[in-house]
Length: 74
Image (tube, rainbow, N blue to C red; front, side, top):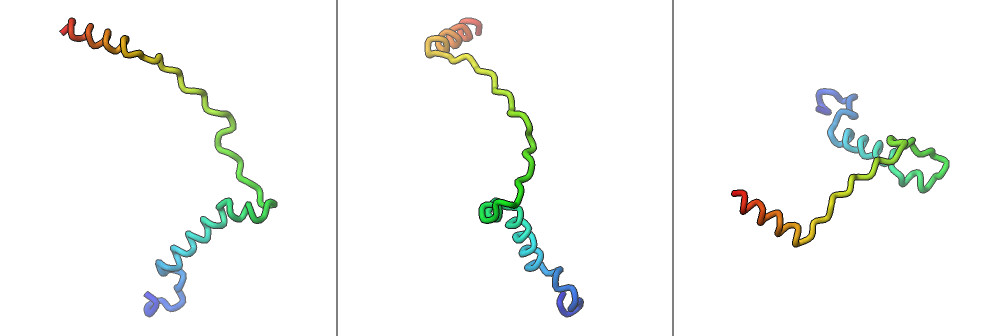
């Protein structure tokens, strides 16, 4: 690749991976910790998610009764 296109050094896989890593580091929190003037992005969710509905807790006697009723029905 370098012999065919000597001016296209940025197209090598090593440079591509290095560029991706550099972009990831720039967007990470490490730079924000070092420089608090860098603004944080706005959160995607402006409202908290609704809580999950509570499931009724089954006791051992409830489970035994359900199993017994299924056995009787079968």
